[in-house]
Length: 479
Image (cartoon, rainbow, N blue to C red):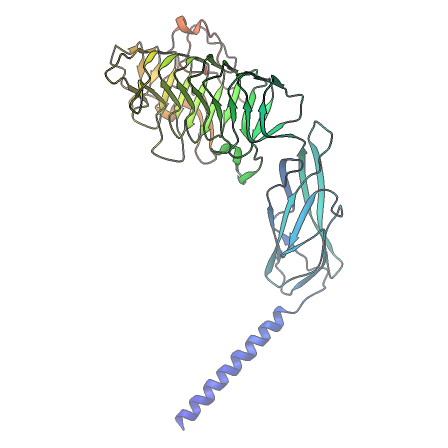
């Protein structure tokens, strides 16, 4: 009798669960045509930053919510332009310019994916494109998500070898370089003010001939990767390392003259390998690279008013040759790995191979970083003609053989390491290496050397109390 009762109870429970299940399913499958029941969107406008024409953009995602107590049927999802704008959509797994019969169950959602491939035009200027995704509900209610993009025409160089002299200017369409741009041994590349060269992933500028970069303070020449989109809302890919290759000068290079350049986010910055001609670098930034910032092997180099910062390996490496650095800032705050290189590395050796330093002189420079010591010298048992004059250095400056009227950064300093600098955002990777009011570098340089460089990288006058590094302190005006 007891077993029979148990079976009856169990059967009743199973029946109740079954009824509940079917009722639940029935509720979910109930749809409404009430005009007051509408969709909600995770964003009502999808905006793309500038995209190159003819290149498919990243994909943006919008969540389409039904927060109502009954399901909604979307009769049609369509592009307002009919598909002529270059925008492309996918709704709930379906592609097309017009998609029919999409169901969104109660308290549920579907995805809208958007990307764009803007058509090329003859315009030098960027072109703004606006479209919309129209959602027409079974009730007749229409809702929309606005689409915005700005298209920039460009010219592509694929595995190009320049065998004749070439001039690049800002009056031309921007260049996107694929598979590297090579300057042949008897050719020269002259890049004029305001020009930007966009390099695809892995592409580099390789120079066997001559390179002249002629930027200005107002219109520098920029070398960067070709990704214009963002990893996160707050983080453009352009702030990340290893977006392209870098600039490599081979031994046959007869001239390297770089003024007012911005070289950033590459696998390396500028590598100079025993080149024939002199290396002149002035008023330039080399920042945020996955290898060496500036690598000089057996070169005759003059570097002035230049910032070299945040390199996975050394910001500046010097092996052999003759080099002079005036009013430079070397700042080693590479953020992605703790085993980063030095801000400055000077050596008579690469492995066991001798590359004897003939002269390496540093005047009015600022060298700092995360480590306890950011200046490394490796003379071995060979002569080592290395000298620092009126520099501020994160190292022990007590050896008068190498250090002349220099200041050593210590933890007792009023400012120390990153506290010397104006902006230091390690979340969004935004850095501004201009000096703070209390920076230890203020007033520590010598007028004997600043006389040849009376203004800093940004055109500020150094005057009678020059600061160490490439930036003279400037008082910020209140907005």
